Image 1 (cartoon, helix red, strand yellow):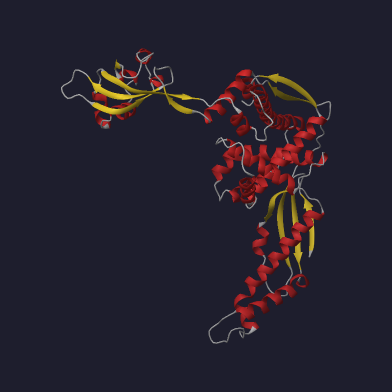
Image 2 (spheres, one colour):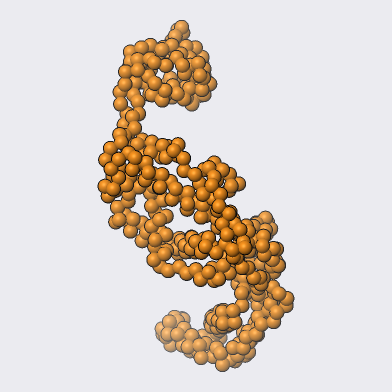
Length: 444
């Protein structure tokens, strides 16, 4: 097969493939013989349909299949060997519609190519890029510690009410002919919408009776009143007056204690022996998480910096829109609306490819597996499961790695992590120590 490329301009080209009988005849004849073995046709025994008849009825489609296979292998092999930086897929030109497939003939096919723009990006010590170090405060440590204690906490009965306690009792409507009354009613006065109503419960004890107005307390919230008074929804707002609430029980959530069980639950292995050591490890844990977030932010800033440094690139817009249109099932409005964003993503993809090659970033199977483990640990941690048994971890990772799309995403994450580490050594970091709030605002 004779293949050649004609450059129209810097980002557009036409690739021509001339397919001669010598290229396809052997494969075509073999495909005909294979079809003969499998074909069933009325009037002929299986496998005994004449070759001439097969060619007459199915020859064109079989020839088309074989020529298409040759084109796929030939075109992509040529593009790969000649290092043509193509965007998307080759687009058949209208000339191909005029090609008539006949056995023994020579066929000429043409395809439009969208070529990636050429640019050279180099990053070094002269390039200064922000890097954020987040200050881990005592308040952040305390909040995290309390979260761990909450998981090991329990509800306990107490004698008198404090803010955030839960009260249980009997509620009875006052000064009406047919009063609403319900037993086993549970309330959290802290969540009343009205402060005056909330204060009525300050310091109350079991068996005390509190007179309050639920309608005022819950700001006429129909759903809250329906649940509290145990009435029909359409009747809830008809009870605007005061109620007595006789308290039968007060319960309080008490966080788990600082003890070795808590230390070992969060940090297995018995290394943590005291509250001081526990808080220090929690601080380290938070700092490590912020470091990952800072590394991610660094890559975002590298992207912005590098994009601005190379300036606006020239793309083969017409061809790219045709490629995107095919991927969008012909939705032109979608293509037009998302085109600028697609170009932004494509520009970063090309930049990243160049940076990855320059910094010799490579990802192997072990890197992907380790990233899958890290992602899995983070997913379990969201549900408070900090220490996953190895068996569950391995099973989850195995399932993740069965999905091609998931593996591709993991590879991308590995590449960005390794690229970020390499670039932190290569450029000059403009390090900034910021609060968590300031850091979060930096993403805006």
